[in-house]
Length: 557
Image 1 (tube, rainbow, N blue to C red):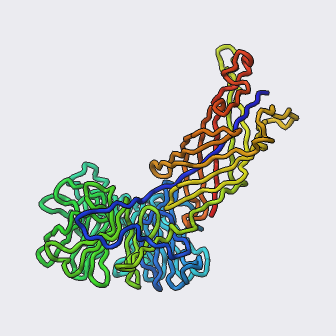
Image 2: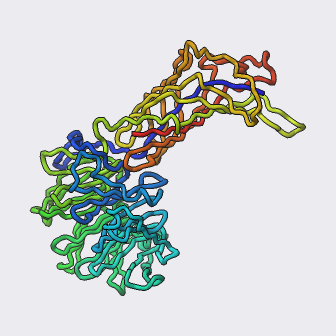
Image 3: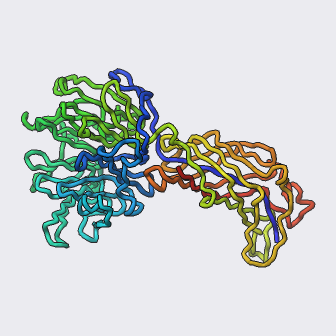
């Protein structure tokens, strides 16, 4: 039997970030450094795609967290902030899905759309409040056009409309089961993209005062009057990749593409005035993922500052008094890398979402409340029972039978984490440290027979604990990160870097899970037992200097 020893460590990471980037030539209402921390309870850390009003002044929040799942939350203003009960995760009992939009209809039903599993809904808010599991699930098997659903809307007649990846689905609960869904696809040929599918990949739907449906898609936006599909164009060019459409108090339609494909003159924020024969007016070069009008008549948007560069985004207000002039007064309230959902609450505050959670802006001179990033809420303790480190090593030479490689003498074992803590800020790993109990290193054997103990080449009496301290974390796409830190074994400290994936198992900021892999050269820490450098002594019992550690870390608030 061949043995190997070395020690391992690990760490982890988080998804999306939101850096502050100030803009020029625009009056600024609030500097991002003024973001407040007065609220003690924790809000969602998910990417907040949509924010909608619920009944009794509640606020509904939805969005995907990473490639695997997301959540839907309800904020109840009737509950005292700071008691830890203001936010409720509504989707925790449904399972892991990429929730994207949410709606509470006039009957009290709460609808959740997903981009991977169709639509879920609680059949009334009373059942939800009582904690009963009265949940229904609609997919393509029930008549839904597609299981990728990015928007949900209720029209004046109480009919529910879904924007799916394969057209519009119309749901009428008054019809018999099996006939409840009717599906519609735009027959219009694409004016810019060659892929006609994009014209039916629906992003948003609204009904105007005349009963027409205005529809945003990842291709050409269009209007549907119940009979005819009319592609929206300006000077012959289509409005592409439209994520938000709104009708203001005067009956004007506002729209913009979030990513802002500025292939012609259609990038930026636009207003359509039906009273002038249906003319489009460009209001701003700024794009918009979401558009709302507040009680005072101001227009608010989240989205790109420049349609040609979606990496710089902002929460922006267009002043009501100058709204319809050639140069409306524009105020940039907050800037960063990603802003999405948008809502005016009953108390007049503006709620908006970004890649790491939800914010509340209560007006000029008041701090912006960040419901996730709180003082004292950044520390996560590693659960040593649910976490694990397994090492894997192999022999320097392989075992052969003729020309067939029988084995490389691979061997595995584990080592226990003594304690550890991570520091997380805005869903991003920023620091942490781990202590490993060197007395627990052991080899895993497939058979249950007696085995000799491992050779005593670690001085565990003098160095019973090895440590790892994070010095730098680089974020990649989605949940992928690269962790750098100082690893100390036997009193020797070296800098190591390794890749990992991290995600929040509970979008309410409860549990973080990390999957990492670290490869070490054990001789860097003076561990030469049967090493390659001593091949002349060990021969075919030589053990490779490269040792790989598979790391699973579970950390909790």
